Structures are given as C-alpha cells and as structure tokens.
Length: 292
Image 1: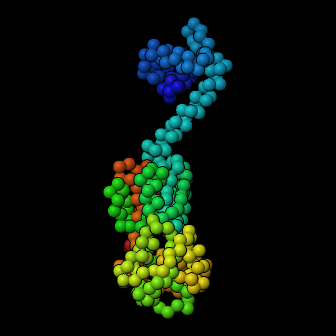
Image 2: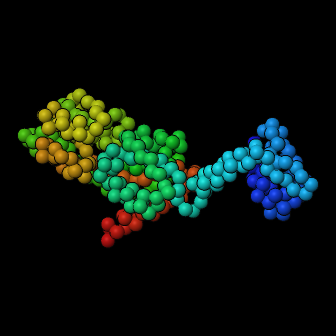
Image 3: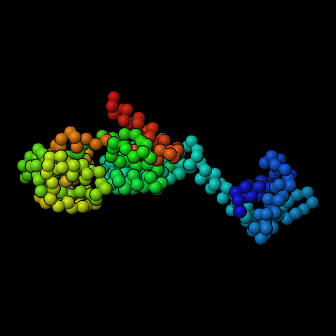
C-alpha cells in the first residue's frame, strides 16, 4: 500500500467519480482506475459501490477513508517536521551536564515559547559520548567543549566557561599542580574533556594525581571534595549555582587550562533541520548581545 494509492482513493471519494478525480490530479482516468483496483485487491475489499456514472463509498470504504485521511495528514506533518521552514517535530539535543544546568535553560525556554510546535528532547553526558551520538545520528546537535576539530562536524561557539579547581576549605592556596602532587581527584569517565584537561594540568607541571575516582555528578564531586577526600575541576558558573558552594575553596588555574569555549555542533554533511537553524540564530543573537 503506497501513499500515492491512498491519495488517489481520497480524491475519488471526495470527487465522487474517477473522471472528476483525474481532473483534480491532472492524470488520465485509466491510470486512477488501475491504481484503485490494485489497492482494493491488496486490501481484499471493495471500497466503492459502482453505479452507472458514479462511485459511492461502501461501508468498508467509508471506514477506510477515515484511516486514509489520518495517514495522509500524518505523512504531511512528518514531511513538514524535517523539510518545512516552520520549526516543528522533535529536536533531540545533547549537552554537557554543567551547560544543561546553568547555560541553556533560559535559551531553551525562550525557544519553546517562540516555537511551541517543537518538542525538545535533551540528554546529558560527556563531550566524547555526545559527539559519538551526533555522528551516529542519534542527536541532531550537542553542546560540547571546543575547540571543534572533528572533520565530520560543524558548529558555532556559544558560551565561554572558566574552569576552577576546588578543594576543602582548610586547604592551603594551590598555585600549581606540584602543590597537590599525588592528591586524589574526582572526575567523570575517561571520555570527559574536563577530566583530560585536569590530567593535562598535572602532566604539564611534571606532577601526577593519586587515585582518580569516577563520579556521575558535580554534586557528588562537591560532597567528596568538601569532606577533604580530594580535588575536582568544574566550571565556575556551575559552582556558583550549587547550594553547597561555601563548603569548598575555589582555586584559579593557569590560562592554558582555565578557559573553555562551548560549541553547539552537528554533522557537516546533513542539512540542519529548521528547528536547529532557528536555535542557532537565537544563540548567535544572544552571543552578539552579550558582547556589546
């Protein structure tokens, strides 16, 4: 059963005859008659009662027409969701946890207010995992840390983050990695870019962390660090919005590892859907306003 057959059936039902439907569709009547017979044979039912100069829906045809209208309407909606200029449908996005918690909620709220026909589907994770999901087509785009280097991706910078090192409040000021050589650290899994920055900070100062404990949330890291069990690296914007901020001490990192640019990235070889294009427009407008 093809959509073209359903469209022919709907037109014949609305017009009341093959000839009238053929005029509407700009096709020859014999072609419509053949396609209609093929549909009836496939269904194993007669959709029309044939009269002299007119076709009248059978009871089966009337029931099938209702399904036909819904199928064709849904097909039109599906087409608009990916090819139309008006954003609609589902937009699956990925984001770093800190970006999702602090940076993008106001943007996504404004986007939803402007484009209520778009359903935003947001999931979080480390940059490496998010990039993999964009490449595999699971996500339309993702907020990850830059610089952007994968040849299959394109994107735009949207936020600037400052990373800070946190320790227990009674810790002496930390100026360099040698000051905490051998200290335990708390981080996300190995595909987390912030963790790689943390490890690079130690390496560049000819130092090394002790044990690396992998946690799944910044709140868990903060709790462990406040208890004096180790150190963690996290965005300053995230720390400022955490209720237990006063339970840890923040230390400034060198410029080489302190500043991170957050990018929204998507596949270079795919045409961005209308919803994603509108989101990029909003983010670029916001960045421009913040720079003025």
